[in-house]
Each structure stands twice: as structure tokens, then as C-alpha cells.
Length: 176
Image (cartoon, rainbow, N blue to C red; front, top):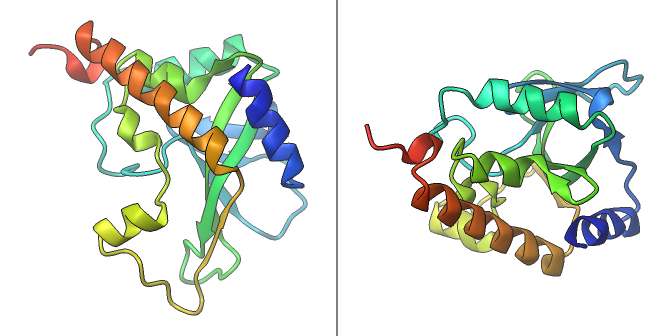
């Protein structure tokens, strides 16, 4: 039900979603294949901490297997910002959800202990202020693609998945 709502809200915002076949992922990052657009967009499965977040050793294998098992999954943009390259003012990064009907890759990664659910947040105004990131320069671009209600439902799923992984000592929660 939530994925249907997420897909609806995404469509309501007037965006065209891509299929997982149209984006090649290498770990948590992906790039569109065979695009005619001049805009270079990097897709990321994490909204925060994508370079510093603890990840399980097998996250790349789990992502590849999930995508293989869900060839009809859709890429749902959540938050886009840019530019990300100093020499390309049109370059952007989009935090996205990857969903196939009732299943979601991002939540699956948290539930398997690959990443912490807090990394599925995007930098809201409150988070940016807490982190001292609340000052955008004139060349910066950002856009939220989803409504707050669907986002909050998703974040609750991420919290629940984190609790499950922690309680079962999976992935990053393993006792070493």
C-alpha cells in the first residue's frame, strides 16, 4: 500500500520515473544508461552519509541480487541537488527509492543490516540546520520530489527495519 502511495505521489509531482533497467548501479550509486539528456544525474540509494555511512561488507552483492530479482522495479526520485561537479553546472545527484510493487530496495538494505535507517533520510531544512548545511549559494539547486506524508511513512519503515536488523545482529550490527 505504501509503495502504491509513493508511486502515486511521485506521479502527482509530474515526474517521469525510470525503471531499474535504465539505471546501472555500482553499489549505492547509479547512473542512467542510454540517456539523451545533457544533464548528468547520479542516483544514490542513501539520502545522507553516502560516503561515510557504515556499510556491510556484502552490500554490493545484496543490491545486485535484489535488482536481478526485481527487473521491473521503478526508480523513484526523492531529493535532487546540484551541481555536484564544479565543471558541470547541470550535474545533479538524486536520492532515490527503488520499488517493485510492495518491495523496496532501500528498506531491504536496512533490514539486512547493510546500512542504518537514518541514512535513508534526505537533508531536510531541520537536518541541514543541525549540520550547518543550511546556506546554499546562488549556484546551488535542490528539489524535493515527494510529499511529507509519504516521506514520514517511509522513514517509519526505515526505523522499523533498523530495529529488526539491530535486534537480529545483522550486517553492520553483527557482534565482532
